[in-house]
Image (cartoon, rainbow, N blue to C red; front, side):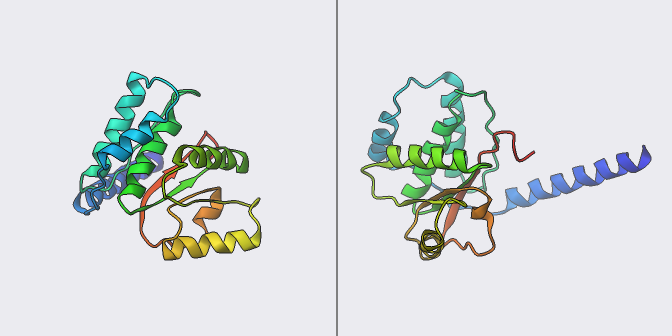
Length: 182
């Protein structure tokens, strides 16, 4: 029991230290260009819920500040977590940053990829997918595109976390846990 208490104290101290270091770090401010952002938001085919709007506003407020964001969005199926991610990702790429989205399954990765492609249609941002379903040739193209900045958003499984992946200017990292990562 004493050993567990000691370990919990150590973990708490480490979390406090990490939070303190994050507050001291500087991040680039990412603010939407109003007309393009409004057009993007207008493509959402549903009426936003109060909780959804709150989540979007808090994320946008966080990325507009000069402190690195660390935010957890929780909600049941249909809450609109993907819309929060879409709008935050839009502001990030609009600000010249790259976005990485990691999912626990290839199926969810493909679903997000299709959703992002549809919602970003007509905007000049490049979106790619990276998972075991992507061919070796396409995977190399995606890795090269992330490194040289040709790809703005990458959506994939743990393949996005590979040591062979280098970003030119990663500004937002989204983990869609779906209760699989623990």
